[in-house]
Image (cartoon, rainbow, N blue to C red; front, side):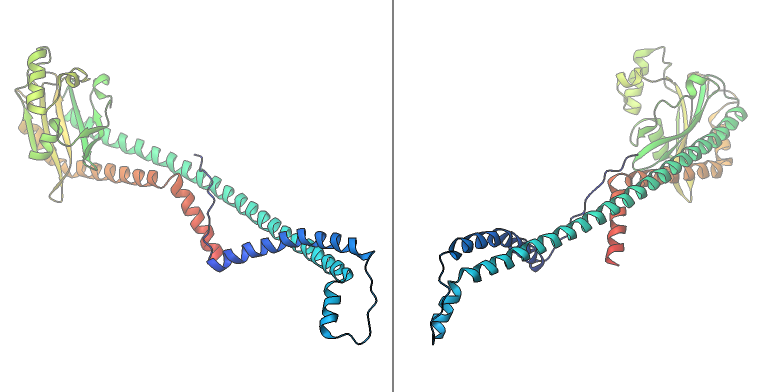
Length: 325
């Protein structure tokens, strides 16, 4: 994970900015004016009469001083020396600042590398945690699948609600094709999951078999709001559904769906009441799995929101705080 380097610009006050500009202007003027004055004065030295009359007044003396090329020559030399000294001092300060910035950059890049390593390590641990949790939930569903006597035409899935969407926590079927998690998120207001979520229990024993394509697609459209194109893309075209909302402290936290492509799925000994009784017995276990899955997903989203630029901002804030302290 690469983290782009940012340069933080600090605001300066009016007098600070004015002083910085004045310092720079004085040095530029000195470096230009000094040699110019020296050159001009040197041109007049040869023809200058340095004799001074006796008993001159102050005004005459001042005129003599101001028109004396030796005075201007010495002044020019002094200005040049000041310019050279000031420029050298300024360049040293700039070099010191550059060295400090380079050192800060090296420290920042080192910190970024450590953060990248820590983030990757956390991601690997989070991925492993998700896998372990998924396997644990899948084992619970597999147990329910076996206890209820379900077969390769059937499937059981469990979903949790997060940010107005249903997320697949896990699913199981003895048929590998039906057990694959092709979709991870589902709308809150559509499908069997939505019906079970809203009404706590949803049972559909009237859906035609998918072999009757027109009737099947019409039923899905009227009852669940699915368009024909969406229905045709279903990996599992179930015709029997039984869903229950999983409650925790009096509020729904997820939904468990039992479904089958067999029209006899809810007939005989394997009926809705038997499944309902089984779910009520293990509801606390399911709700625990749902809470764990939801909280893990929220943590991952929060971490994702703090990567990239936000990591840069945190680093810079810490460096800035250290400089201010």
